[in-house]
Image (cartoon, rainbow over all chains, first blue to last red; front, side, top):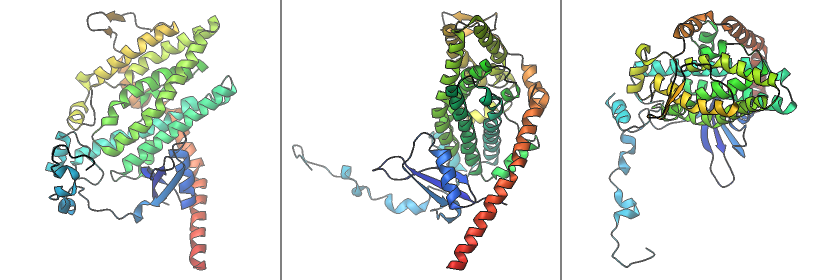
Length: 92
Length: 308
């Protein structure tokens, strides 16, 4: 009997997004939530928890720095710092 | 594998699905598993005093601390699993004695003052060991250590507070605190492992960024940090050669008897058999809970399916 692995995401307070905090084993989603509460929020670290079966996550690629991200590499003009602003111009 | 070395050279972090040398993976699995085992075995010497804590306040604190140790074990098993091992297999290796846990937990907790000494010295030494691990080259291990270190600082303070209270109590209570320090001082120094001259894994671990400081350096840091705290307690560190070196601003101290460390690691400490037997029994006694939870999950899933 192998308990599935769940990835745990916690919203630390209202206004912030859920952030990955770790993983745990549990037989079902209800137990995964309860375990996540006991393991990852013993000190009020969260106001909301998501648990996601690790097996259901689709990830980009085994090597996290490969060609998948290359298209963004040569488009520096997407950043405001690419542009020259004449001296004295404000609010731009 | 070039990207592995390039990441290390840039002081970057290695993440689970990156290519890594087999030795790096193996070393991390061994170290993280041993660390996880230490956390859960470490619940025993303290759990021993939950029912006998001297007040409701102390009992609540001790229960919270022992729960934290269980949590730390879970963070670490989860970190180990990112390297492709299974937690159940790691527990089997612990139970069969093929993987170790920290030798410090093979010493008994004879009096209430020992609970103070464990928090102050054992958790204090653990913090000295673990703070540099927050910058370990393996991301999941480093992130687990950040959480652990945040929580350990309460552990160390509550231990110091127990001893401070005893040291300001009756003569008998102060003697109890001194006795605890006498027994825990040397095993605490051994927690940093063998001296650099005899440490087998250190050099490679440093090159890989798993380890950031040598055993002897960490031991020195612990002594420098702890001796002034002993002075505040009014306790005597049981080392006749202990002295302060004005020039370096550090303490000179005696090395622990490493033959004792090797002997306890081999399984001949005062509590090795008791700790492992208790751990195995708890695991076996809990099997029905895991089975029931799995059966319930299966039944619920089947019901959902037939309703759909």
